[in-house]
Length: 212
Image (cartoon, rainbow, N blue to C red; front, side, top):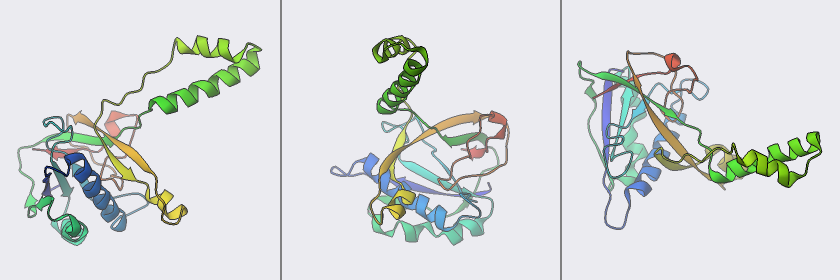
């Protein structure tokens, strides 16, 4: 990644930073889908320079990065965010500084309380059928190893475009949890259409981007 541009989010008294993140990132995601270079594959990555350093966990700055300046020019993010011009400040494209470290941003799948309860009930039913014990006894036993919901990571509420297409305009919202992972060296690979590194269990297969 050799070029970047920064988007600063500008909340107001009656418009929260979280709401602006939702609107901005939704448009960025749609723009990346429209400019994708493969199945769920983007040539442009996103970064959160103020991740964890602001009252709002993601900060108030979104960075777009690309290997070539022409890719950011072709994306023309200004046109995608024109309806939000009062709430964003988009800077010009610049070359990435030479002295940088590496970092990786990935989508983290997090189970909430509702999903955990549903999984627990499903496991208890299967165990009850196999063991012949009552469902209540199985639930009590599973309660000892019940996982806890982890919602400590920052997230952005987004609308599912696939659901919207299937339901002819009706879309369901979901939280996109974003995790920051430190990388010791530059690593190449694939970015998805959220601009994040494609998920891998192996840290060595994650895609790095410059951090500065």
